[in-house]
Amino acid sequence: MVATRPLPRKRESRHHPCMGIKISRRSALGLAIAAGVASRVQGDTKMSAKPNWDSIVIGAGVFGAWTAWHLRKAGQRVLLLDAVGAANARASSGGESRLTRGSYGADEVYTRMAFDSLTQWKWLSDLSGLPVFHPSGIVFFFQKREPYVDQSLEVHTRLKLPTTVLDRGGLEQRWPQANWKDIELGLFEPEFGVLMARRAVQTLVKQYQKAGGEYRVGAVKPPDAAKALDGVTLDDGTTLSATNYIFACGPWLPKVFPRLLGPRIFVTRQEVFFFGTPAGDGRFSLGAFPGWADFNDGDIFYGMPDIEGRGFKVAHDKHGMPMDPDRGDRVASPGALSDARAYMAKRFPALANAPLNEERVCQYENSSNGDLLIDRHPTANNVLLVGAGSGHGFKHGPEVGRYASELLTGKLKKMEARFSLQTKADTQNRAVH
Ligand SMILES: Cc1cc2nc3c(=O)[nH]c(=O)nc-3n(C[C@H](O)[C@H](O)[C@H](O)COP(=O)(O)OP(=O)(O)OC[C@H]3O[C@@H](n4cnc5c(N)ncnc54)[C@H](O)[C@@H]3O)c2cc1C
Image (cartoon, rainbow, N blue to C red; front, side, top):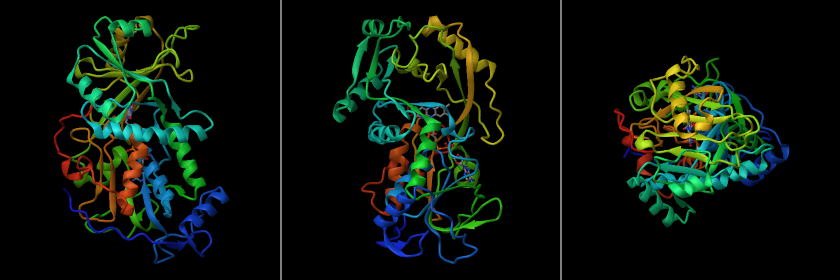
């Protein structure tokens, strides 16, 4: 384990950044909500020796936004920064949609996180104008009864997660629009479904601002983290200071901490496709077909029904080539498109010649084995590193934010060894699916 230093004690009262008066945490939150807008900046460190914020969160993807939200809920003065904007097109959270599922084989930690996050996603979806969460259900299907199936079922039984096992006949009866000939069984999880990724993060950032959190666009320069940070510097030279700094920079983490995370986070190019469904044919739309994943002997394909007219989504979960999130082009490769088409012809024959509506190129930020990273920096003890979503992180956003916030505020009951920096190796050996 990486050594963790004593955490700063929580303060019972504080100066509200807008009012300059001493008030309780609860009143500060109430005042900010009543104001209905983000707190205004009172000036940066240049003008004041005292830190203006308890926490500065760098990166407004799904991990940073939920961390900022939970810290604000805990009564902290929080500044959320993003170089480009919340869930921007280059960010891993900037995609259209993401699956949420409970099946993780024996990796119960992720089943729990996905399930505990679901309540928070539903809360967000209820107050968002357009849905953030579509309870489409998820079917995960297998060519043969893999150990992963029984391990998932064992965890689901323990956690009381409703899951139906469907044999080939059951799958054919329920969803005749797919070809199930090579499939032995599927696990159907009715509670899970699809998250509208970009909308989710942007809605959350608005809620966070309504609750008095501050949000700004600004690119933070890589810090010298040899010891605790006094501040972070933006590209325009502004210095901002806080008690704690949370770096949730997704695929940029290896650039921000090149020596520490360069060898430990592997950024790969991933391509997704949306195909047009036949006019007047609702068989592949939300309500008629669930979110899905094909185990495919360990070489997973996954996708979603047509949601909001975007098209039927198909993606190959295989790690692509290394990618620079700033410079990598966003045009899908012909090879990936023909892979997706070949898969469609086999599994969804009615869509074999479907027109391509849209292609997206994004990046996974993989740890060596797929475990998340939520840990303190080894030398800068007021820096928290949050990332390594590894192609499955989005669904866990709410619980990642809660964990990170409780780690900082001293409320965390038990550290999860799998999230530690120490467990992040420098060779890839993917184990979490
Ligand atoms: C194609 C694809 C499909 C996926 N499918 C699923 C799925 O079905 N289910 C699932 O659960 N997960 C899925 N994932 C994984 C999930 O999307 C990611 O794990 C998650 O979005 C990572 O979020 P993040 O907040 O760590 O990073 P990001 O969303 O990339 O956010 C990082 C932010 O940091 C900002 N930033 C970077 N550097 C700086 C700096 N120096 N200063 C200020 N700001 C900075 C960036 O602008 C960016 O907005 C998928 C990912 C991809 C790419």
